Image (cartoon, rainbow, N blue to C red):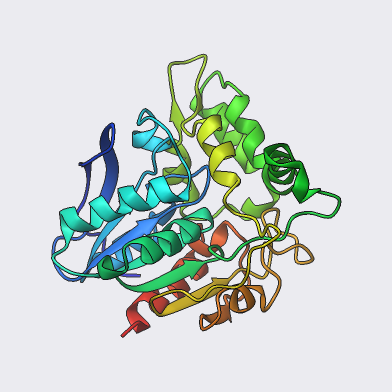
Length: 295
């Protein structure tokens, strides 16, 4: 996927402080990339260097995560969209292409809806269309029902946010047991090395639980919601396997994205799961190609 390009971390002034961003590349069109619900900008650790050969890839740490973990709430898609808008203004003179993975897809979609003049196109990577509530969850029960939905769909991912680890090897060992990471993907080491904070023997994941729980409430299709087209052209890249590499439980069944986001161009990325669509070599190449194919 090309030679390694320049990479640096910088800060962008936002509400309450500075948002951490990682930047690959020094010239060319700006691309702003947004990660998933408990992740960081190094979810793009393979894609950033490839696109950075002829773009500037500005990947954010959303507030409550990574180097932005100490930015204050409130959280939620509207708050993240406002932060992304500040990032666009800091790095570009005009509208940019936004790419979002998982919850990052919801963030970039909200950014396009709230700040359409800042957005040229969208690449949604297995995220951005409202998710179905799990069977048995009562949507009329309010926030408690949504917390139950979060626990049902991504509870195992959230569980690590309450854990402590004696050293980085112990944190890495936890992830090496994850069914989505066998064989171990090329991008995982850098991603996970960045994902811990604190001091031994009490390291913890960088993502704040309160941020993840609040943000998760914005991801589901609730009563009264209706399909809504995006204000800018968009491509949806679907992972055929889910968060635990299960081919029978993709995050998105075929057609759901185009149903809820009328006009989006939906396509499958072969032989990837929800994680390896960005952290695996084949998935990263497909995402990068989709960005390059955008007019």
